[in-house]
Structure formats: structure tokens, C-alpha cells
Length: 205
Length: 236
Image (tube, rainbow over all chains, first blue to last red):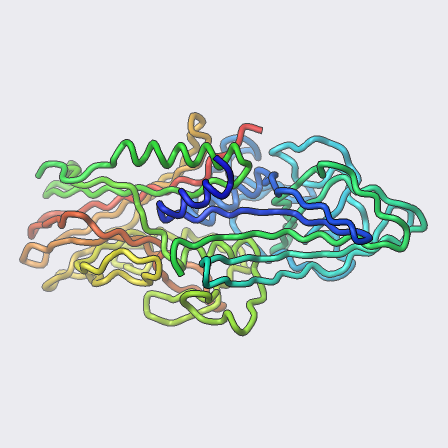
């Protein structure tokens, strides 16, 4: 079964399943790959949003606790969104240089690229969130996009990417971490733009 | 009264199969729900009469979930409820932007006694199930007068099932018929109570039309249980 068949079969049962994809662009080159890697935080938060279930204990297998990007844990649902402003690397789309393989328990990028113009730093632009409705296919498409400019003076190799959200008062929570299928070199004075596209096909309009 | 409807094991197996396929393809599996209805005079030992897979998460629920993930700034052209809109319609018919910016510690499905704005609810309407439903077709009001039932407190339990690797929430509510007459229940649903439009309000998340109506005689209780399963977690 492929994704298309899965979506159709789910839809026939009245079930909507989110499908996500990453597109990265630098210097005219386009890299496109499925966004595969929801982390435990995302599963737990989505369980809370739908079922309002809360199982306490220690963060990890069998509890609904999240671990925020500072390593603190909590057990409540919430979201303040992903639309981080320019220069803010606490949430939104995040870029990294780490090489750790994906783990369900990832709560930070392996080695996040910080905002700035120093060595191995990039200047993060704002994360934008743009929804579009297609009445022909009854599909919501939400494009979450962010560019980062390399003014570090050297090339930067991007190997991982993530999506995190923020909500008050203290949590920045990683939802998605994908290790890139192949590293992307961003030359000095070039930008890298990442777009995370989430589609939801409704059974009817 | 014997069981007049039970979960189709083939349908349930197909859903679990789709769930497994979703995981294989690295997609977030869906949240599934089932419900069961028990009837009896003795509140401690009501009889199971109806059990089924819930088929009807409505538009409100999906819009709320989408907003939970992204909390978007909604463009003007999508500021309405309905096809192509990103607003939620409350059970009173008011259209609002979902807004869950504030962490909300209250349980959204746990209604206190007499509160029909949260938790399991029952009705006597016959409208077909619809993705766009935003209220029961004809909700049974709380009370003891004609056509009314006394809604009890919603009880709940939460658990993790290591075998299926998902969380489960069970919401149970008793509705006592002291109206003096039999009440014929034809629909059930779940009301969610959450932040919408910068304040807390009630809206419909699930509506299920019964294939066969259930008569609740005067003096009997209807016990509604909704079980909501979170998405199955991968192993690594």
C-alpha cells in the first residue's frame, strides 16, 4: 500500500490522516522528501488533543508527558503555534548539523544551527504558515516555510531539520525531526528555504 | 433486551490494518473511537444493548486538531465555518476561530451532572450522519420533564495499552429517564468544551446515528461509554 492508497482507504472510512512532506531549496536546487519523523511529543500531544487522555509518570513509554527543548517535562496539551519570528530559533522550522539517527524520543535537534553570522550560524527568517483550501479535492494544505541565510563566511552543511511549536508560558516542544537523506551544503551568502507541507483530505467538504 | 448491534470484527480489523499501514509509511495513525450503550433499572448492572465503532468525527474536531498543531493566523477568506472554512461552530450555532493558545488543564469531555455541554450526550433525531454536523439533530435536554433525562457526572479513566501501543480514554455517563414515559434514543455524541474565540465554549466533536433505536423506559438509565484511542505509537 502506498500513501495515496492509504489516504483513499482512510477517507472511505471517514478518517482523515495527515500527510507531510519537506521541500528544501538552496541555490536553485530542490530537495524533496517525505516528512517521516514525528517524535513522541507529537504522538502524545495528538493523543491529548483527540482523546484528552493524560497518563502521568516519567516521560517515556506509556505516559503522555512531553519533554520540552530545555529537557523539562509536563503533562498538558496546548499549542501556541509554529510561526516563529526572524532570529528566533526556539521554535518554528529549525535547521541542524547533527548526525544522530532519528529516535522517537528526540526532543531537540542533534546539533541545532544557531541564529547569527558567526561560524556555522545562519540568519533565520520568520516561519510563515499559509493554509489553502482546494474545494475540488476537499483538501487543506498548510505550508509552513522558513528561510535561513548563511552569512557566516564559510559553507554550512545541513543534515537535519525539525519543527517545533511554542506555547506559553514555558514550553518549546519539538514535534518533528527528520535526518536529511543527504546532507545539503549551503554556500556562504546563500540561503536555504525549507517548506513543510501538511495535507489533510477531508471525506467531504 | 439483547444486544441489538455489536462491533463488526472485520471492520475493526480493517481499521487496525490501516493503522499499521500508516505506521509502516511513517504517517501519524488516526485517533479511533468506539461507543457502547447499556440500559437498565439498576445503575450497578445495566445490560449492554449496543456497541459500535464511531464513524463520525465531525469537521469541528478536525479543524480543532489542525489548529492545535499550527495555531495559524487564519486569512480572511477562511474565517467562516463550513466547507473551506477554518472556524468552528459551537453547539449554540455561533461560529468562532479555534483558539487554544492558553494551556487548558480542565478535562474537555468531563461534564458535571446536568451539564450537557461536555461529554457524552444523547438525542432523538434521525438526521443522517454528516461531516458537517455541529449539533445533535435533537438533543435530549437535562431534566425530569417530558422528553428529558437526568444527565449524571461523566466519569473517566485513562490508560496506556502496551500491546497496541496507544493511549485510551474512556468516558462514561448515565442518563436517567424520570420523565414518566419511554424515551427513544436514536443518536449519541460527544461534546467538547474548549477554547474557541478566546473563550471556553461547547462544540460537537462526534455524532453517531444509531442503526436501531433504543427505548429507555421510565425509571431506566442509559449508560453511554465513549472510548477514544490515541494514535498508535511506533516502536522506535
